[in-house]
Each structure stands twice: as C-alpha cells, then as structure tokens.
Image 1 (cartoon, rainbow, N blue to C red):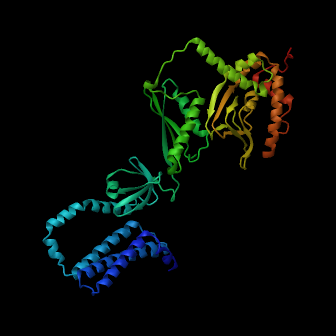
Image 2 (image 1 turned 30 degrees about the vertical axis):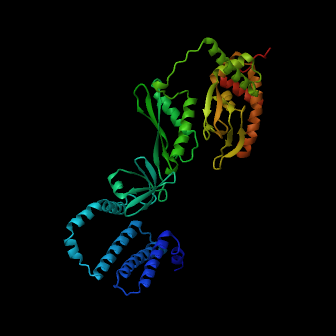
Image 3 (image 1 turned 135 degrees about the vertical axis):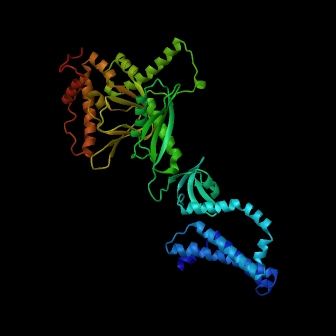
Length: 482
C-alpha cells in the first residue's frame, strides 16, 4: 500500500479523475434526490461512475501491477477503459428505461453515419492492437518513418508517440503506421544496436578507384570517433562509376541512433582530411568550375611565398640545422600538406613509415603502448615540433603512437626527397646521427618508464650513424666535410 499511496496522489490523470468524481458527487449531493430520480442526479451518477472506472483502472495499471512487477501495455488500459465506460453507459440507459433494441432498429441511418464517422477511430484502435500484439513496434524502439526519426515512447489506442532527437513529441495515428512503411532500427535498452550508415561523396573519374577506397577506409581506421563501432569494420564501395563523377559510399556501423547526425559529421570531417592527405579532391559540379587565368609573375610570387614559409619552418628544426639554404629549398619543394582531424591516429606504434611530420598548427598527444597495460600519455606536441624522424632516417618502426588532440596542419617529408640531399653530401649524416642519438636517448628514457624491456643502448651515436648509412645505402666511411 505504501507504493500505491506514493503513486496515487501524483500525476494529471489521477488529479483529473478525482476532480471529476468529486464534482459529480457534489452535484449529486446538492440535487438532494435518490438514484434514478431527476435528470441532474442521473447525469451526476453517470459521470461519477465514469470517473470511478477511470480511478479503478489507474489503480490497477499504474499502482497494483507495477508493484507486482507486471508491466501492461498502455493500449490495454485504454481499451479496457473504453469498454468499461461503454458498458456503464448501457447500464445507465437501461436503468433510465431506454429500449436500446428499438433505438438501434429505428436509427439505422444514424448508426450508418456514426459508423462512417468513426472509421478512422476504429482504424487507429485496430492498428494499435496489431502493433502491440505482433510486437512489430515496442516502447523504446528507434524508428524511421519518412523524414521522421525518433524513439517510441507510447503506443495508445489512437496514436503512437515518438520522441525525436530535437526533443519534440510527434503523435502519429496508428492507422497511418499500418499503411506506411517504417524502419525499426532497434532498442538500445534491450540489446546493442548496430545501424549501418552511408556517407556519400563524389570523386573525379581520373583518380584511381583503389586509391580513393584506400584513403576513405584509412579515414576511419586511423581515427577514434565515439559512436563508430570497430566490429563490424567500415568499408568503402564504388557505387556509380559513370562520368563526369564517380560516386562512392563510406559505410560504417553506428552504436547509438540518437547521435547519428553528429557522428556522420565527424566521419565526414575525417574523410575530408584523409582525402586531402592523399591528394584527392572532391568532384566539382560544372556550375562551380571557374577557370582563372593568372600571369606568370603572380604564380611565381605565390610560389615564392609558399617556399619561404616552408623553408622557415624547416630552419626551426634542429634536425636540419646543418643543411644549407639550397638543401633546405630542395626539401621545401618536396613537402606535402598532411591535415588531420581531431581524433585521428597520425602514427601508430610499431608501424613502419618512411616519412616524418612537421607540425604547423594544432596540438597532438604522444602515447606509449605496453602489452597488457593501458597506453600511457608521455608528451604533447605543439607547433614547430617534428615527429617520425626515426622512421625516415633509419627505417625503424614507430616507437610511439601520436593522436591529433585538435585539428592538425602538418608538412610531410618522405625518405626519397631527403635521400637526394643526403647522397649529395653524405658527411651531414654524422651531424644527423648526433641529433637523432640525443632524441633517441630522451625517447628511450620515456619508453623505459612505460616498458620494462626497452633497449638500454638505443641512443649511442656510433650505432645511430651505422643505421643511417645502412638504411640509405651510404659507404661505411665518408670523407670529412671541407
């Protein structure tokens, strides 16, 4: 009874039913007549009975059954309420002396009109019953109906209520649900949801399809996006290989339907960054294609400005301190822009990649991963930092994982570009070995704290010099620089 008392006073249905019952009882008392005498008293008795039925059903479905652990569908309460009220009205009419048989017989036209007018109501009632009994729709299900997407909150005798992501309560007649085709995405409360999402994009047909597919898959393979499931994994497919644009779809599995728009947006951001790193541009519609004619002097000015910025960035790196201006210009010409979106994995520990990154803007985190233990945050990279130099200079696997804390703009320098400079002047390999040895010692100390089996002698200059000469195919000894 304690649970019933706690439930009964609250809620609008309880208040409304109690107020109607009290008003009817007060009217009956004021009429001062006994049951069956006077139209006012008869009306009060009819209303009081309806309110009593409502209170009894509220007590049964909202208090007693939940206390016993029984959850009854709301439509059962609605239908029982309608049937009970109809039975009570029939009883009161019989008590008042109304012959229901003759009334129906002499009012065939009225009956037909009423039946025609109630066909939508009957359709809603039957639709609600079918939805409830065949379990095609249940409370908590995420569904999509045309352009409507949301979660089912109620299935009533007349309508189904759907709560959208915008917080809107949408009322859909049950008959409309029975006629329309809707998609049930799943109920996160009952079992994990896996909803495959499609991200469409178009690329010029001149770009090899394999390159596009690989870049698109790398967008999610190298990213950490909340809501994107790892199993099943993402994939990219070519859907329409027709000129003037090839249409692709990047498909991934979503775990929470409530955040589909925000996760789709994050996936698109990572996809654009991955395509730009691969040098792939989205196809442009013809109405947006403009040809701009620039004279050679302007093009030369823009190129010179870009090369100056790249050379200045390279001069700020201690690894390239021994390079001449001409050698820095050679490297500047070969730099490639490499943007990353926040959450991207820029480099992964253990991967083999023969290039380095020069961070131009943004912030990145450095992690050391140890088998059987959570990864450990060991450093933070900011504008002007270089990482990945050991892989480019010695071919060693990455010693740490670097993730984009914010959106990053980086320059990428590959081994072939640097090899041309190094082979032209092999003597600078000794200076490079000293810098790398110092960096290796610092990194080795960090890794030793996270991994007990880190190599203790990783930072010796002699060993570093030998690895550089072996990786680039240089002679074991070179003449000293003049």
